[in-house]
Image (cartoon, rainbow over all chains, first blue to last red):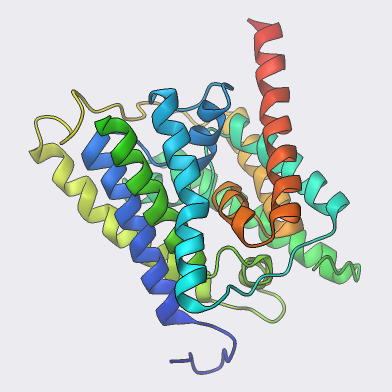
Length: 148
Length: 139
């Protein structure tokens, strides 16, 4: 199914993926009583603070991410993806690492778990990173910087 | 053991959802952020689906005396809007926009494009370590 006016959009796959992400976060919330925030769990796994979960649990969650992607990859016969150059990825990764620790979360912890809880902090954080993400892409496009 | 099992189930579901929803493709993520250009609304459906399911989960929480596999809930209690929160979120958004990757898809993409994803993940962990270092120095 495609969306009128947006031939490249994949609304059904997006919705199905979103439901799976929601279920994943619900398993963490109702099962262990914790927020499924990827930046906090990744930090915890490598011993850099973050989530209060046991470190082994953080590792299990983090290892599960590529496993889940692998299942989709095998089931669908491949995943389309193009990535930026090493230098661009390094700069972006640094900003994401510093930003998510200072901001106490990322798209999952704030954007999914916090927004659905109507947390004021998460709503403000989500609006902020969406806004700077939009402005960043707009500026890069205006400058003709193609990274992918 | 129950923590480990629950965590890996959550992680696998999460990674599958990211891949299925297109979040592991930086071009799709940047297309979503490109609202002034050739906008791709797919990620709005990902966000919407995830938020709807979690909104239901949050309504179940008050009815549970404790989590199913743990002794108690550990939920964020902060409510103050600080410059640190907003500045951090702003910087995160810039990084997200530059390469089209946030932490979950970056880690999940390790099976899709290992070299590229590894550079992003190592840089991200380095950034986290920098914050940790300064916090340690400040306290």
